Length: 600
Image (tube, rainbow, N blue to C red; front, side):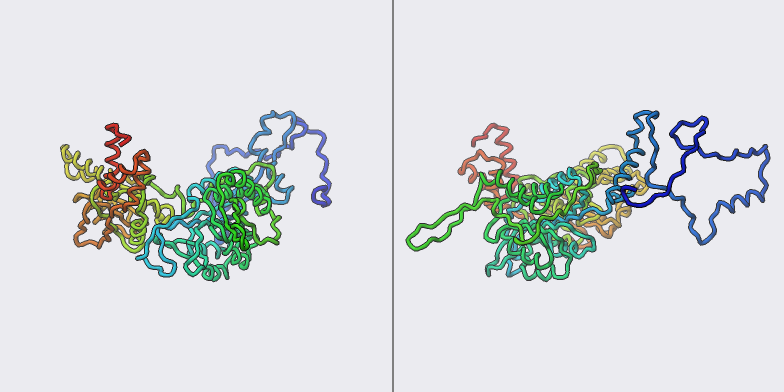
């Protein structure tokens, strides 16, 4: 009555006499004694009447008894203390707590009402001219923005620790993904755009997005205006890009109330952007206002980054005066727009003091944890100078079933294939996963089977089992039916939308497997590496991508990464001997280390 202001009916007093019942426990219900059947079987008429009572009438759904999602138990001092820690007591207390503060949360619906955050990141492989959008103008892109995996891991840690119920979707930034997210009917609390900001030759500002083939898409401001005109723009937008204050006006006109951007005349360092994003979201997700979270993030950037780096700006002075110089600190490059706006708003209010259950991050689009069903080797950290060729392979995989990477030995075909796997896997191009099979190991297994006394049928079944095991599958599973030939095995995965990467397909076995795979399956696509183009016979045409030699600059950079102790003369000699082959460089350095020539 004090909480809700409602006159509640008086509850009748409990009876005073309760024999054989505890003082505070409720009375137990009295049930009629069961009627004993004295060994007589029921008649057919009685059985029919009983079945008719059990069966619901046709055309009507059986009614389910009402059950409260929380069972409230009465706890007395006479009962043991450990009962207070039971799950029923905790559920009852949580239910009453939610009822008092005005938000009743039912069981099984804790994810409803979660605050939605969209994180879009552009990481194109190659860049083209902004005025001539054509694949013939490829230039490697030099992006100075934080890499997506580190940002994703940081945000996941922050969300796991904060008490708010937040749902973050990670995707790559393109016109298609931006339009898809902003046309959704679900409410979006915050939109984060991480991209490279640049100016064209005409002086116009553009956000560098990406397309489905990995090329840089220069989205000019007038195109961005058309895109946001009829979209559901969230209240808060974070533009983590250089000179992004130019694009902030468009989001304000579209309806955004809080914009965090970089000054229009300043570039932003990746270190300062990483620190700012970390502390801004840590404060915002823990219930601080937008203005307070912005001040906390700027203060941490000033304490960590400002002492190490700063931008020197030169301002022209009057006649006869020296040119004035001013150091622009990294913390001063971040701005909160509009300047006269009301930013004392809490976007992610903290719930009650009660600890909320930990939530798992949703797997949407870009994720390093996406559907990998077997052990794929990681991309080497020294993989350099292959972005143009990776984009070429990705473009061909969009429209063709089989792509063949061809090149001489130690040119880097396997590394190129692993880079393609990483790119398509982060963007979730294939819903049923990506599989990596090293056919060299399969060929060695075939040679061992030929040396043994196994029959051809047993050898074929053993190869199929090894192939499935390399994919991370079990052929003895009931869904597979224990196939004994490659054609039977490929028929079981004929409807899978997946990518199979076959490395070292330099034998007749590899060509046979690729030919059967492409013929039998309908949606699966194949990426093959070999020294010479594989012959598929009368089967479908395969697209060939030649693995080219590294440029002189990439060779020098690779040597600097692998052997930083070498002087310039030794680096030049090794570049001349390698002829652009990264495998030769690695083999030469390994032999030097074994012989002890570290200072050659």
